[in-house]
Image 1 (tube, one colour):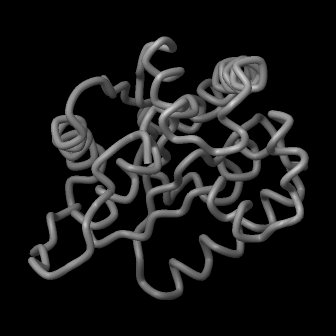
Image 2 (tube, rainbow, N blue to C red; image 1 turned 120 degrees about the vertical axis):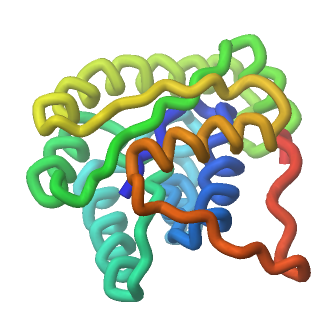
Length: 197
């Protein structure tokens, strides 16, 4: 199980999906799961975060379902704060291969988010609140992972999508030496080609 961290617009979703297809793993995005569940639109649009108890229950259910189906996992944006990190490190530290932080300069992130066009990406003030919350939380989360000897890698998220995927692929193989690239179905679905989509 790999945790994928990064600021909004860093490409976690695009890269998480790409890696899940390459390795035959399950991509679990906390943001996607929350949006599909519904009922949190106002909080999201105002740049707020969903209550920890709700997120933990939702992701715990998704993780157990994927594991029961035999999938290894890429966790996209989870855990998001200390309470979630304490839960995951106390209940499944032995399953975590490592964490990857996808690094992209903020000026590029603003451009990517403007292209993406979601409601919660339109207000720069709201975006900056999300950035500040992430930065505050990541500083508290990483020591919890380090205390459990969970490796943490930083990957440059700037450049062509396929180049970033290649960098991430090498890091995933380093963190989980048993991970193998799956044969690709030439008729399969297209991986998202733009960080703005």
